[in-house]
Image 1 (cartoon, rainbow, N blue to C red):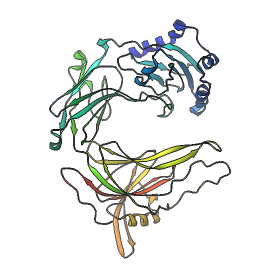
Image 2 (cartoon, helix red, strand yellow; image 1 turned 120 degrees about the horizontal axis):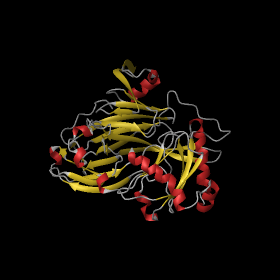
Image 3 (cartoon, helix red, strand yellow; image 1 turned 30 degrees about the vertical axis):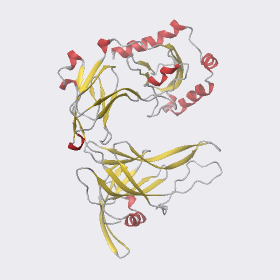
Image 4 (cartoon, helix red, strand yellow; image 1 turned 120 degrees about the vertical axis):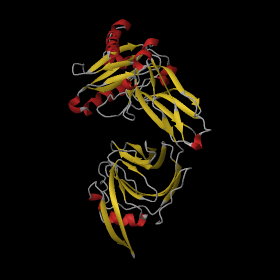
Length: 425
């Protein structure tokens, strides 16, 4: 906390050191960023009660170093920046090897604030820390080589949500190390900020560890107090990371038509389909799930004026949890998955017609007739994320985006074993 206070003081005295504080009009005239400044002013209207400040200034950097600076705001070629910062948040600029720059906005901050020309100062070696760790791999990966990447991830929030400016560098890879299963990794010179460690090989799943100088994030139950060497050596030994082969998932998808959102004035909005009408085409996919698998579902026009819109990409994301399960999620929040059990796509569509979506999140038993067959299954409802099982069929809905799909998992295979697929297709 002492470092943050020092940085804030520097931020406020720099304008007087590097020149006279610029008014908003002076800044716009000097930089040509009128549209960007007005967009930041307009953003304040979307903050609760308009609480926030337009922060603007310049980083004293060479244009080619912009790619190394992590922030939630865009830094322009000459180092200028402008953004609306929500009350209680801090605008951060992180650069490996240099002291972090943090500009706090509170209830006493003016409506707009010039922070002047800011310089990155090299971080003193005695204020940095180092990390090391080992990996544990499955027998199939004993001869593999693993890439360990040290990354500065996205800084803390600046808006009243988790957004960031277009064009912002929201992550930066500091270094890579190549190791074998018997070797350790080691990184030095780390700053007192949040870092991300990624470990993977060509055939393994991806493992991620978020950690701070004072311990690890929620992904692992580890604190500095458990590491006796930390107070003296400023070194953290991270927990051993287990790596296994990435599973291969074969599945089928059947989508509804993706409708436009916020149609142009005068155009009647399309009513929500209840139940949804699925497209006749059923697509089959085979994907290696290493933790970063993305399946494109399509694009959607979202209008923000009579004749202007942007294209929103919708994806089905397949990740791996700490129990090595394949987890399905949607690119947009406020969505639900229904695990319909080991039943066919046709049977699941019949269940949707029976309006089972209105049931509570708790599991519910269903028995109904599909043609000459009586189908009995238990349906469970999950919010935003769904662990996938071999042979199961899932119904997905995001009513806010009017996206609906059916997903049938045929097989989930690993080198250790191949679980049998469900018999019903």
